[in-house]
Length: 159
Image 1: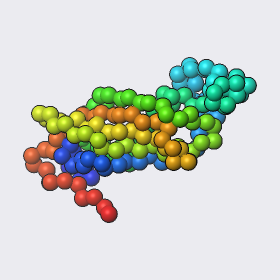
Image 2: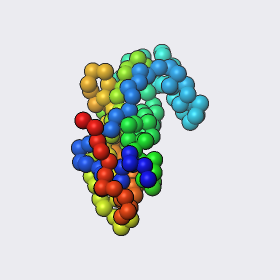
Image 3: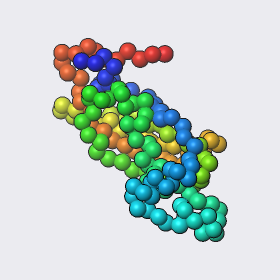
């Protein structure tokens, strides 16, 4: 068994897992539109977007939500063997994200609910921009395996 696997018992309230920062570009908008078919002019038409309360093209909310994916964070390699399912997600959009903004997604352990053979790990998802403003806040919930009886007591964490 991989000694770097986190099981439910290994999670600590307040522990934070980060994703690499990204500067949002027109390419992000185009890829998202190609994937989803969302072509609302607030994302693609400069003149239209200038006339809105945001004054420019804004990122899709669901694009931002996707950027909080645990699979893109430092948590991903630690739960490859123990994750059972992604069961819930929510998000509130607090500030617009414009082309050229740099965002930093993070997931913070906010609740641990033991179940019979698994545990529910609830994470607060948060994205901040280059000014330190929170632009998205929400939750993720994952079912994670409990530590097998025949395994060692936990993952050693670096300083």
